[in-house]
Length: 359
Image (cartoon, rainbow, N blue to C red; front, side, top):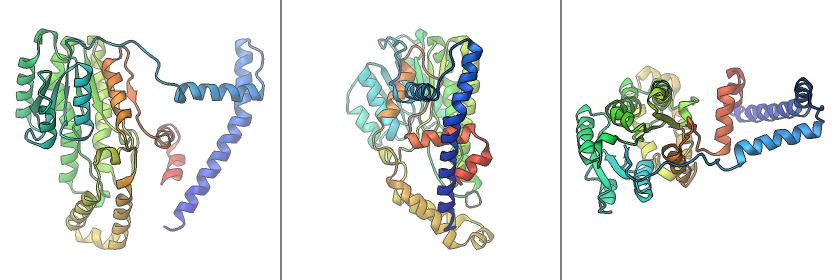
C-alpha cells in the first residue's frame, strides 16, 4: 500500500506530459486540417494554442451568461430538507428573493424549523415533511395547496434537497443501510416529485433535484450514497424527457465537497459510524480485512471532516439560476476545479485510464 501514492503521482505526471504533447503537436495539425476543410487559412501552432486557451476561458472562467429571468411575484417554491445545511439556507434565500416558500422539515419542532418560523412571515411556511412517509407527503400536499394564493396557477418549483450520507466498504455495509440511504435520497425524491408534479405542470414550472458529483462517478467507501445519487440522475433524465411536452424544466445540481460548509460529516459521526460498521460486519469479513485495514480507512474518513468548500453560495447560486432563469441548464456542477476535472476524466475517458489515475 505504501508504494501506491508514488505510483499515482508518476501516472498523473506521465498523463500530464502525454496530454501536453498531444495538445502541443496533435491539436495544431487537427485544427489545420479542419481549417483547410472549411476553406480557412491554415492556423499556426501559436494560433491553435491561443484558440484552445480562449475556448477554455470562455467555458470555465467567464461568468454565467444571462438568459433572462422569470418574474418572482406570485410564485411559490417547495424545498425539502430544510432542517439544516443547503435546505435551511435555501429557504431563507428564496424568501429573501420574494418567493412564497414552503419549507419541508423532518423535525417541525427542531432548531431549523424554529429559526424559519422566527421570521414571522406569511410568505414562509414550515411543513412537517418526512420524505419517506407517504402520509406526510400527502398531508404536505394538502397544506401547500391550501396555502397557495392561486392554486389554479400551480406551484412554480420543487427542490428535492432532503438527503443523508454514509460511508463504508461494501462488505461492511448492511442491506438495511443501503435501503435507508436510498429511501431518503432516491425514493424520497421520486415520492415528493410524483405528489407535486400535477401542480408543477399546471405552472409549467421547475423540478430541481440535488444529486452529487457522486451521482456521476463512484468512489471507494461511498457505494450506498453513490447508488442513491446515480438513481437521482437517471430519474431526473427520464423526467426531463417526459416533461418537455408540458413546458416543465428539470435540472440536476451536482455539488462537490461541501463537508465543512454543511457539517454533514464530523469526527463524532465518523467514530459512531465506524463502530457500527465493525460491529455489524460478519466475523469472516472482520478476519479477512483485519482491524488494521479497517482503521486505516476510518482515519481516511476522519481526514475528510475538515475538507471541502467553506461557503455554500455556489450551490445557492446554481439552484437560484435553475429556478429563476428562463433557460436553466440541465446540470449544474458547483465544485472545486480539481473535482470537476476528476469528474470529466472519470466520465469521458476509458475506465482503464481513470482507474489508474485515481485508484
